[in-house]
Length: 246
Image 1 (spheres, rainbow, N blue to C red):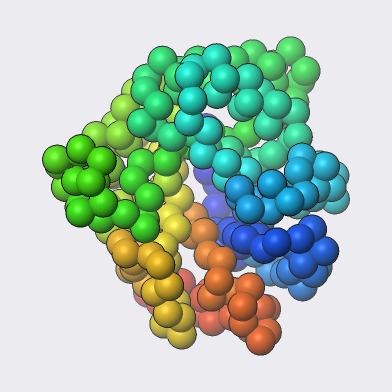
Image 2: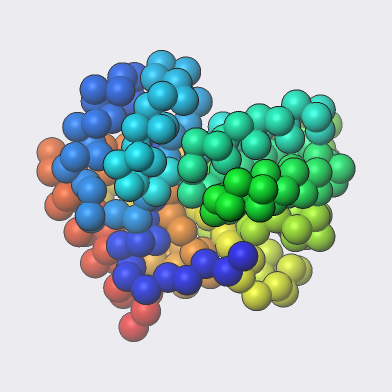
């Protein structure tokens, strides 16, 4: 599935990494129409559950359900089908779950959406978290560097029919070269605008670097949701993004 992008603001996904549905609603109310989608991750999903996701999608918002499914194939497949029933725009799994898990997830979600005549969500794979680096990988027994591991997992995800990957923009050029498939999406967290701090991210890039390197979508949380004016923060990010196209 290709990802048509017309308006630059549609390339920004705001991470609703907050501890209540009330706070998430406040963010959505201020930023609706200013960004392309909202990410519901583990924290908010644990607090507010699938009901809040249904609320967002019913109101017409695009939702990236960022639960990073990673389990035996049957469990991941069934969870992904349930996510599709929430009408989310995009969901993710961990590429390190393996080829069988990813192939079956795509197959079963496609079958469900075909039988219900619903739109299939984009299915992407997490490669290496942007809070991890070579030392982190070494701690868990992965002896290759982060870029090599990211590219390996991206190629596997592409071979399994997934729509794209989550990866740092630092690896985006290498992913494009290795995969070489039209419409393969690179979703990039760990992006820090010029006005923001790094927080706990390690493999970080600026907005301009991310787009120059080939990222399609940026997931940004704290630099936006902690700003005095969230709309102004988004405007600054879009201004930085425009420089990448010059």
